[in-house]
Image (cartoon, rainbow, N blue to C red; front, side, top):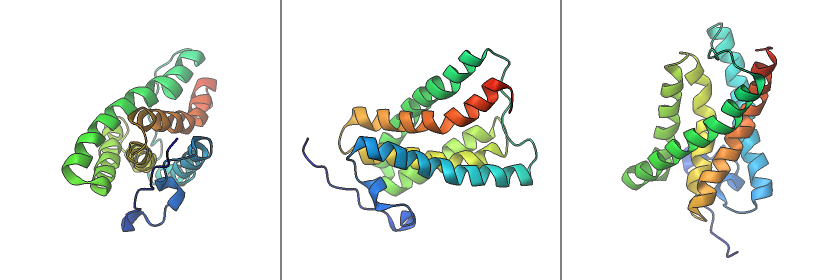
Length: 168
């Protein structure tokens, strides 16, 4: 595979590792993106729970297998298809950084409609998912959709296991 140059890391995102802006090495990239999405969102989740008790969403009663499928497969696939399509338009209209910021803010707002404080947590992982999408779009549109789906599925796996087991 021919090397694809890294995307220039925007100054506003300088705190993120340079590696996130290089579309190569999928096996190392996915765990990095997942940890970059997960760890700060755990901190934001803790903070949201202190500011607004019961800040998370309510999930319908369903079998454990169905909940796991819905949260780990279905939601990441559908949300990434929507996110990617919107990002393609936003990047064309406004550029790389504004597209990422508008996408993550939009997903935060959309998730806040279900549970108001949830948007305080969700915008961060979607900042990472949106970055992953636009970085990998330079290599392949197929990978641009696949990698955020994988990272999103991993992001949802822990909470999905808790919800499916009745502990959340």
